[in-house]
Length: 327
Image 1 (tube, rainbow, N blue to C red):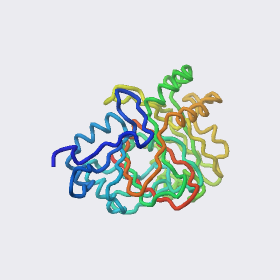
Image 2: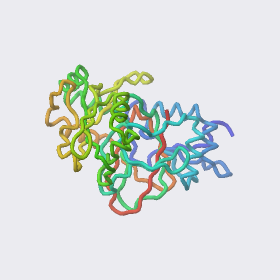
Image 3: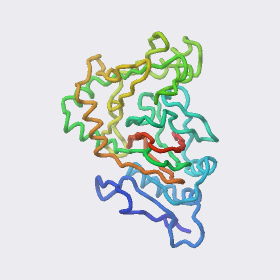
Image 4: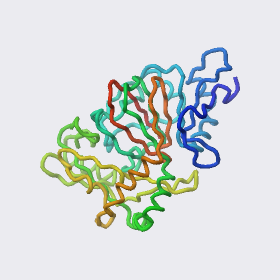
């Protein structure tokens, strides 16, 4: 069977956005109903890799819905079928995750009643995954949606709203800070301990590994303060020839050791950000995002440079979403 005839593009059933040239965000693909036999997502992806890459390049997000993907093992097969090289979620990652099978991890294990702010995966690190896969193994009862937003649109909207801030951010870069405890904190979205984050219980080794990632450690009671940067608060997307928002300015995570989330980001010279920048950024992200109501079997593919993602609080359990990361 030739090319994209395996797929049927779904239009109009979900509140997709249309940002440029008629390209939808996200692009939604389901099995082609004209094919008599059941369409296997792994086979369809293998046969259509170049075409799917072109869709991802256009939109930044592709949702596969209606395919028979029911387990972590099935999901791992889907990831493998993409041909994308594995990105191991190891040293430096902030989210708490557990490896499930093969290249598959749990999504962030933060308490389900908390939201996870918009972010690009591992934007704080010098090396980050280029593509992300998510899979809904257990459909949420209510809440627990995953929200996605196009990074280039966020950059343009923030430039319109706060032109002076964006200029200063580009000139000075940003410093981000977070506090990691001595032990895992299950109550926080960034609850990994410094031992888990740097994969050692030796402070000297942790400092060396942090330095390799462009991080500086300051030991405090009960843990360590991690300072990252200065780093650019944006990236230039070489493939699409545009600037994209690539930072954690919108994130506000309060936990036991870091009770002032406003200090989570500052200019590269140590100057605080304007008071309204973070709140305005969150408003823009909320206005521009697509909110995915998960269905069992959904597989979501994101370009990590082009798209930020977030999680809304779960209202009615259960919910189980798995993740995989690609170079």
